[in-house]
Length: 199
Image (cartoon, rainbow, N blue to C red; front, side, top):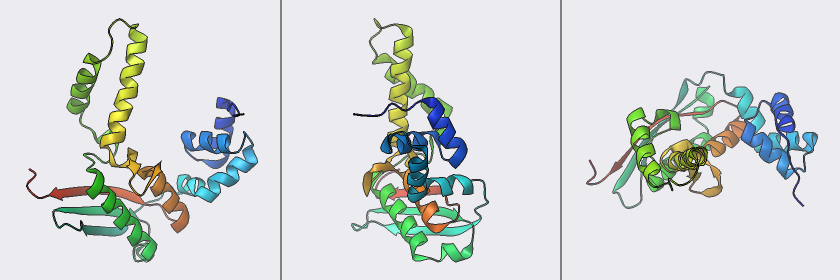
């Protein structure tokens, strides 16, 4: 039987851990609403550490070049961390490589939803809005449209996409886990994907 998690419990865990709301809810769900167990769960996943380090400056890092095995797709990626020491570790380089592999495979158009231009959002809302049954109440239509826009962001924004090597998590969740592992704030700053013949 699944445990119902209240908003109050989620807020309490967020205040204790500093972790994002969705991670707090998942932690509580996985641990039957037990705050202590949920806190431990977040720590093991590295989410708590990542949240506490999010405000720290990340000015070191790498520009990582990746060439897909067929030689027709390439990626240039900038990932920042706090120290040159971490930038030189195998774990950091592996993270950069995994993100580059993901970009080569999944072709994200934007880094995060906030980077999607207003005109692209407006056009997408217009197209998706036309597909909704107009006989439904306006409030329901708006909820359906918002849900479809979230799906659009999850398909086209790198950090919101399901991670290619483990689709049980997003790229952002993979980043968060890596922050916990390396003990430094890590920021995927920008990327360019090249595909032979594409403009």
